[in-house]
Image (cartoon, rainbow, N blue to C red):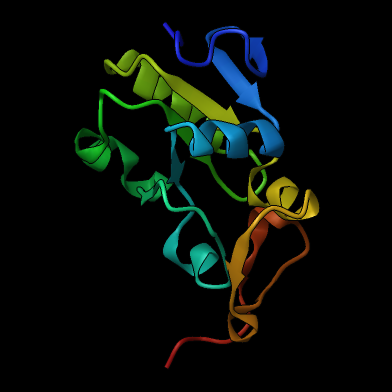
Length: 138
């Protein structure tokens, strides 16, 4: 398990956690970033990487079959809250090379890694895990 990510990041139990810079390097070397954020979270900020797939966490159990089994996957969300359970789910369902982006897109941005952003889609909320769109979409 996790042969592609062996000796990379920090392994806790069955899950490998990568810093944003380690994840960016892995993506440059062939790993695929799987963004599990919900649509309203993606509208404001998105990872600016070529090797990326979207699979909303709320649909992961129904849609995980669409993810490639033969490629290393890095699971990413907003702050890392949902990534570990998603990675464990994939590992339990036949995926072998799965890692987590530690800190999600928040740490990715903090480290100055490439983002696409749309200020008109800003979110608000008391906690990063409870962010909601400021205005309803028309």
